Amino acid sequence: MTQNATLEIAINAAVTAGNALLQHYGTGLHPQQKESLRDLVTEVDTLSEQEIINIIREKDPIHGILTEEQGFIGPKTDDYWVVDALDGTINFIHEIPLFCVSIAFIQNKKPIVGAIYNPLSEELYYGATGIGCFKNQISLKRNDCPLSQSLLAQAFSGKAYDPQNRLKEFETFGRLNDLSQGCLRTGSAAMNLAYVADGKLGGCFGKANKFWDIAAGLLFAELAGATISYTLVDTEKHLIDYIAAAPTCYQELKVHLDGLIRSQ
Amino acid sequence: MKKLLIYGAGAIGRGYVPWVFPPDQYELTYVESNPTLRDQLNTQKYFTTYCTKNDQYHTLKVPIAKCFSPGEELPSLSTYDGIITAVGPRHVQALAPNLAKATCPIVLFENDETLTEILQKLSKNPHIYFGIPDVITSNTAPQKLLDKDPLSIVTENGTCFIDDRAKSLGGNNHYVDKKELTKQWLAKLYIHNTPHCIAAYCGSLCHKTYLHEGMQIPQVYDIVKKAMLEMSQMLKIRYHIDTDFIDWYSEKELSRFANVLLYDPISRVAREPFRKLEPDNRLIGAAQLALASGVIPHNIMKGIFAAFLYNKTNDPDFNITYLVNALTPENFLKLIIKLNPHEALFKLLVEAWGPDMTELKRMQIK
Image (cartoon, rainbow over all chains, first blue to last red; front, side):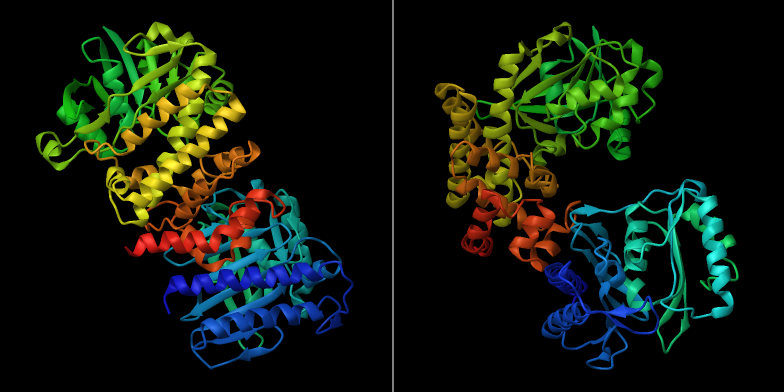
């Protein structure tokens, strides 16, 4: 399968699933708790995920798919798809219009193709290594900026993955909030990274975030000119520490996040 | 001898400007961002522009004073009698700080009337005027001419209309009042620009390199001619422009597109399809105006679909192919073309998508 065909599958699946989410937005859902009070799943997550799986399986039966709700499905391949059918479930439940579908294709353990779609804002981010990163029809190339001129976002894990460092996470959040134009907690790590690629955020970072939340976004941030680094901190649970920011902002963030975010 | 500074040594700047500001009356200085072209111009110190008249080439050897890199011209800006810009609509706004320092008349040959006011505001310089080089100029020349001078360029024998407030510039131009300038601009915008890019997209589908080659294919000629007719009807209904003028203009344009001496590259005309597909631009904007005037733009829509199929990996908008392949017609039109699903053009395009795309793809195969 060519890289172009892979990209077209990602775009198609993200938009199809996003439109399915939209049909259920604000209709009254029945969320179930997973690992913590902030880690919920709804029937819409499952439905959207199945839409994506159907599309990928039909067009690319060769590769396996790592999903949020069903785990790894299909053939056990080294290169595989990674799917978050609804990133920002809590926002979706509370009708806050910041959520998205995030899909990436992983080759040699790195995302090389991806698509992120927020169906409410109609922002479609997509890209691939060697091709570039785009929002809708526009090619993205972000500007450099220092920390002091940046709006930031921090993504916390669904539960305290590393309880001893939880307080440090909050302390860092507050400190960076004062050292920048503000530090947000948006509820969607995928959108944070897309916004870094888009130049809306100067940088974002997260501790023990799920790989499916951030795979596509990390790719876009890098393709658009941000500096990124990340480390797989838990192979079994697919947890990643990462930083993605405008090059100058990144250097400053790295100092402040030393000892908290394990990114290479 | 008057001194003229020209931003952009491309098709219009190099190919056409010397015919309306001839080198025996004007000393021409260029500002060009392409370093290769700039070096060639500074080394050679002249170039040759050919004008097609009566099926023949007329030659003009143009000496140049200097070709600056952008910014180098600033210290000498007050020494010019006039400034022309021909850098393209996407780049001209970046010239605002430079134009702010100029005291002479500045004429924009940028194929976008709205940019004049924008530049006036950005630069706080009221002496910026709109000009319409009513001409097709290639950015290259056939090989036999390039062999004589690698900087050769070919233009048509056009007519240049400029806002009469810039008439101190002189030259072989028609300085006209606002009413005449608007009439000429509307004709250029809809009878020239819209069918011109449709000719390019259809020609590209047929794997042609130059515009005249595409126009030799009967199906392409037919779509272009009918699209022109749709635009002509719109202009008569909406702007009450007289029929004789529109009919004369249309005939003239069809002959131009088919001019076998011009060698107008399709890649130049078809470049950046997303810009031409913007809501107010020459394809979607034109189709909307036709509909608003009660004209169903069947052939402009074919041009729109041909633009969707423009598949050139070296074009800045090469990503259009991924999107057309990946998205349903409804999603493509909504997310990328920014059409509202409730509007007429959206519905017409969705309806025509299947049959028109099939027809165009058949042209592609042939």
